[in-house]
Length: 82
Length: 344
Picture 1 (spheres, chains in turn red, green):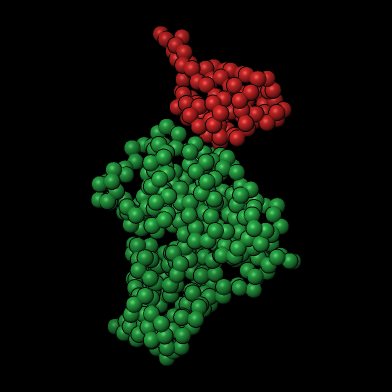
Picture 2: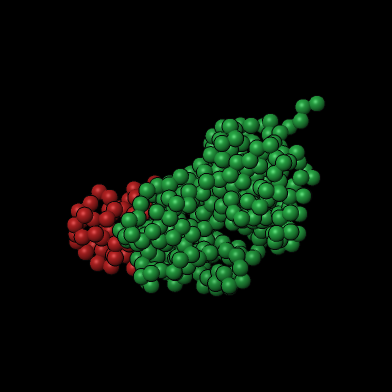
């Protein structure tokens, strides 16, 4: 049986720290305490240029919304079949 | 035969102030069903009170029959016809209602008048030795006037009842099909209360990009309608409601919004009446003056807190002595967008 997963890529070098993504999906994203840019909630002091993580496909709508609203295109969502 | 006691309540303007009377009238009607309340105001206020039991509306025509000094005399005459009055509750306390009180003298048993707290509001907004403290909310001031008459109404208002059926809305295809709805009312009466339109565009733009989301624009007046129509054409998922629907239908739409973005303006109070969360933007004025949306969370007031000149005005009608309206211009669009998004 195939299951779907969503890969969320954060192109942190593009992030301006507007925090729209955090407002929309506080259960997924946070702002890094190291550099004030986007990171995942479980990586709250991340300071590399890019980061990605896989999530259950149930977060797809909200992840897609954050991709739509990010003013600099720092969030990319890719669906994967397994 | 027992006759019901009639109470005359007056508040002639403006829409926001009239809207703040509604929580008191609703609570009064619920807690004191033995009273017949007649609310005298301008015609625009009728939709706000027509669903409240035991409250009837008296239309005051300030531009026609009830205009000027003679008009006040005619108003008193008209009101006497529908008396006798157990009490006259003056929630406006301006020259017009002061004269009306004199003309009604003798035909009203009890009179109570609002204390607007003008001195404390002056102290809040003066440039030097500003006394930055939370003043009594207007709804509480209205409540106190009834308390003065020993009518111990206790405002426990949540929202007004809205009949959701509307031919106008269905014919405009404004029907919620499970989307998120955001309302934006970008205008205010005075410049000191209005977020600059070029910055407001930067607020609407990202919101309009959200999928499964609609942005509704509220406003009135010809110039406003032009701006909002331009935005409707410029941005996706954005609908201008200004000039297309009446206040009743605006309330119906507001009732279905997930969040409403407003200035310190009437729309903040209207959205509060239907229990919709409001993100409000404050410039020259301050929630401390007592005009914050009823039952709204204080954290949703977006304002610059460390400007020593704020608030400089109770109504936002003074021009900025710094000339730069920093209180508005220093608020970034992203601050507002982030707060709005937190409701979706």
